[in-house]
Length: 215
Image (cartoon, rainbow, N blue to C red; front, side):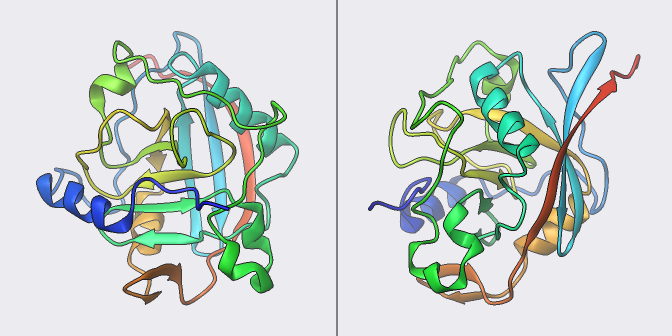
């Protein structure tokens, strides 16, 4: 079974080297959000073994992807999973049910399910605000192993990265960036194995609906 990846690690590294500039955000700062509705926004709260961070979900830009994520979270699907991939200075990745089981470490990155009964299609409209922004620091997008192979795995960009529009963007970290950065700096197994040496657990993922700011 093929691993659910963004590219090969080599290709990822090449892409990152193209856009290596540091974003103008301080550690721990709230990342500016976009694509909120006029009255309400959906927030995913990810409680991890290293702290909590919050993701604003972009339902308008990626309705099917957000619906999949929300329904899985409401079923507690993500609870007990691990962050199974850390590419320093690039992304962190989770959402594989295999990662609950240490005995299946060799399969981490190959699993996933959706609410649609299988893989579902990409949402890659270049006209949307999120697509125009691209894969910036804090952006959350679906991991896949090719076009239209989305299930439950997703990644968070640790820096502005120069990736082609091939991964459905469905949210952005808006609080708890210091936690994401800590996860992104953990020691990994080895140069060809991006699993963290120390388990990073997704304890709980919950969905909250909040009144949008008037600012």
